[in-house]
Length: 324
Image (cartoon, rainbow, N blue to C red; front, side):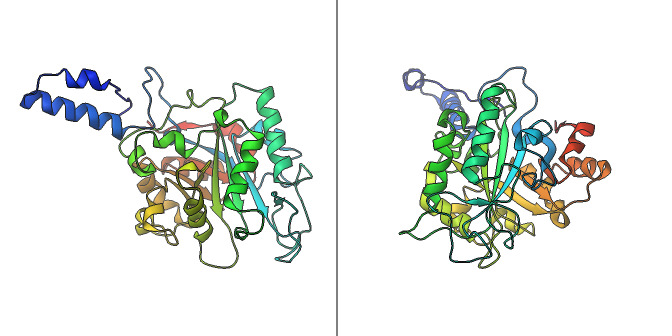
């Protein structure tokens, strides 16, 4: 499927009721509900869920990039690791509704090519998008290293969404709300249907949260984000999974929130799950793989959407691949 058929209710009501036309009405209604992500688009061939490309892994670190603008010259998929604590898991947290951007808990403050916080990193990306308004869709993975703040503190799920929307116009963000449309959950929206084409998504950004916490149950913070934001979220969540059964029921996620999981995060050793994830029109990212062209090609063959590499400049040698 690749199209949504939208018919006014008056049109359906005028159809003469008989066995054949009842079936026709049922089919039209099913098409309207089932294929929410895919708008009518003749001639487009590369859909977001069928694109397999190199992403950057920790490219905010100075040893990999001099700036995020440099990274965006090679890849349209970035990663930012965010921390509440200035050092280790200490009591000194970021003041206000912002986060430190660094890789290790042993680093102090912000350690990145931008030289500042999450707000500053996103601002640099936003400035680049204004200079390049017709850019390919940018997917930003926010790798959260600590849990959410309490109800009386800052850095809660809504604070992250508010920070993002204070920098980027909501019209530039392809969010879960765009996928839902008439459906009650994201899985129903993408079941049996392609995502929008890369052409339709030009100028857009997609935000995805991953769970890299050192303590506690894995994916718990993703579950809390969905509990809090529900259908108003700006970000998708990508639980880390290790086995096939977790595609259906990711650990740490409630049954209700599981229905809104359509992104997945995989270590390289579990990349064999990618084809099964892709068959459901879900999106997957693999990290910690060998950084060779042969590995990139093998992972693309397995339908890995985002192949996260430190040496993201390898994308110059392979580009993006169409899964169709």
